[in-house]
Amino acid sequence: MLDKQAIHHKTPQGAEAIANRQSGLRPKLRSLLIMVDGKRSFSDLCALNGDCENLLLQLAQDGLVEPIGGVMLPPAGPVHTVAETQVAATMPAPLVLATLPDAKRFASRLLMETLGPTSEMLCIKIESAGNLADFVGAVKRARDIVGGVKGAAAADRFVAQVELHTPTV
Image 1 (cartoon, rainbow, N blue to C red):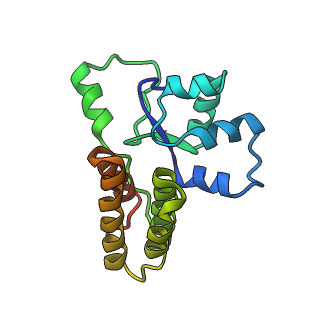
Image 2: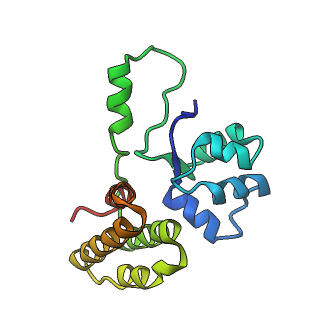
């Protein structure tokens, strides 16, 4: 079931599907995937693309998008209390063996989605990081720039999403 209150963002697989035009996505799915930016609400997406509920659900099931925080609503079944639902909505998605190159690609794409072409130099710094310490330093610099341009909440979202895709060692 799709959480219509959640804001969705592309997963690394979703970003790769956009970058790779031979991904085999139907045009309507590809269009919606391009519009999913981590900022637009469900209603915003539907205003831009008519049949967005089924399409967004398909993208989520294919692992191309996920709600920010990585939590999907459970399928119809046991009723959860409001407290259980709130706790689940704040839990990050489990990290799937991230590598530094994957983290660098994800952070660069997210930064480009957040700031646009003006972030090119920051993306180069992130992508040229030779080790985790350099990567973390570049991400901190990017966070400061995102905060200055888009505000503290956007900077926090940026860092939270990058942390989900960053290796721990």
